[in-house]
Figure 1 (cartoon, rainbow over the protein chains, first blue to last red):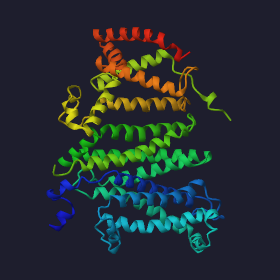
Figure 2: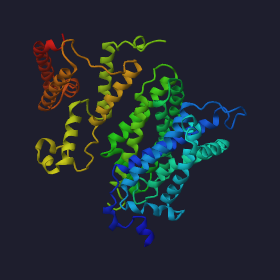
Figure 3: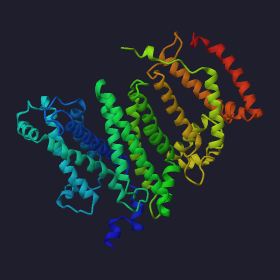
Length: 314
Length: 175
């Protein structure tokens, strides 16, 4: 019985479960975005001069590595603040850190975040050391991290991917919400987060780095599109309640947002424009990354909202 | 380095754009089962928006009540998708032609503020008229006209006549 109630399958608790407002989708978006930024920044750091594939001296860090490393913990912190706003018992937040329950995605997420913050901040301090080295108390951290920078960056790639997937797993383990109970949702959110991160860097980076991120985003959108297709197909061919929930998403009240803002505006149109940009047929326009970011946040909103409106026991 | 100005492409030739629009219209009858429309989506969005804040009042209005079907998927209507699509398609056209940017199209003798107020006023009158006529330029003239509906042709002739007469009085806004 304890299990049934903790998994929210008890119909008596269902009326109280339609409780996630804007805070949760915004957290999921910012969490995915910051995870994507950490994966891209750390991945590029490893590929640059002095990274794992070169034996030369470490060269200057690119804008993407600097900005991505710095923004990752800041955006995640902002997202977690929104998550904190959503908590009903705010003073109980510390209890997440009194145990590790390996069957609980929230427990995995909480502990992943404990690793994410120090390691991403340490990387951000080193790659932006021209700003931070004047603070003498930070010097030991900067020096220690610099000696092991490749190891830190490699760990950060995995941590970022873990947090990116986790933002989807958080939803998909609620199997009383049939729309969410899809194993591929974590990958849809990870790929969407990576694509949003590439878009944000594209928006902020200097001209000479923009085109590279347009290309990276092009590939990421393609993968995101296939993952989303599998998510939809898996839903439609699933059990009756999963099928009904998926049909509600793709042909219910959220359908215009899902198809037009997320699929067409957030994936297909940017993919077409980025392809033309890469072929040098079209000049870069800031509206392209903005569309990707809008699509990415819309995805979180429609999944969270449509999922809550379609419980197993209606 | 080339400037944005000299990278701009020419507008599409009118005749080809017209043929393209006609083909889109045929495709919409085939795919969506009905033609194009502009004002229907706004009317529907107004009804659903009103329902969100004052549901009983919205349902009591005969005009809006028709939008509240039993399925609950009130926004799942072809015209809603189409209106979002017009925006995205326009964006694609503007970016690929190198014309995307911030600008206010207006005559030389009026301010931006005046331009917006007149546009708002004209848009309001146009929206009201479109609902009275059960369709706007795209719903009545294009889609209705294509099916040779007599009412739609009367609408189209009246629209052009009204346009020419109104233009006489507001021409100073543009010249």
